[in-house]
Image (cartoon, rainbow, N blue to C red; front, side, top):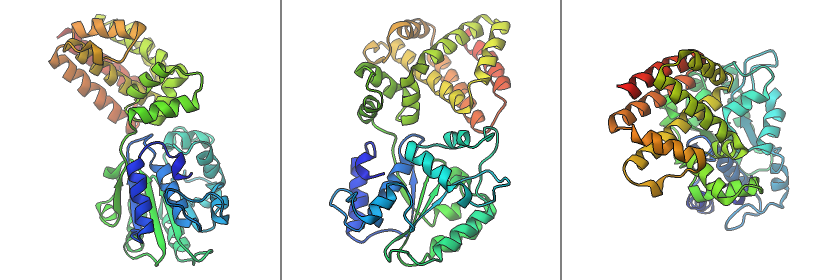
Length: 372
């Protein structure tokens, strides 16, 4: 992953390159941003630039022996650490590096859900990084650089490091060997120990801009019309993975489910709500969370419609008609209640709540809000 292939973030990329060229490379950095923003591609692009032996003004050369090895993520001075399931293959990352490497080369805008799907039978298991992985990090950082230059430790999703492992890493984060760059790439700093966060320099990665997403979608889906790509970009909230999911025409399924759910909740048709809950439970965790975000998008669009700003509403066809009718019954109080309910449900899904029970409870909450 070269900087030129990282979507958007031109200012941040220029700053990172400037730090390297000026010799101001922090020993530990945390690339922090929302899902689908590109924290992992940015960290990989930065690692490549550090390890390149013939750096250009705007990117790594792409031709030197280091870059050739980095094309396959096999450079001996790039150490890859990521969360795993603690099973019979071992308690360190080494046995799974080929699988993780292949997945990143296929989709660098990776999230934990895609990594879980890659692991056989891993959909309902928890990812973590334990003390064995912390010992693995310490051992690898104690080695000398193979090429005599930088030694880079890339830790993907450091929020999955458990407490015991985090405590083992404190000293090495504070005083690593010279010529060492520890790069973390993750999304949830609230799940990390404050002592870890205090020892790393924060690199804030914003959600992708709408225009950058549109261009990325058109490049990945040549058959997509520009107006369709823009709608997907707006709905995604700057999340490339969400935008790609919408571009694959799954947004129609989300709209039909949300529309039927609102009708069933408003009329308190519990048999229909139960059937919809079954559909919701079969969607998969990330798709369920995407449904809640899509619901929040429709609420926002309905508020804009109700506020007399239809030109700002990004919708067409049946969705546009639904927003027009939904806005007619949406007061500020109801909209705030809907937002709170959907955001709370999203948080509960992140904490592995039972999706069917959550959906039914949410249906009763929607009834109370819509009929109050």
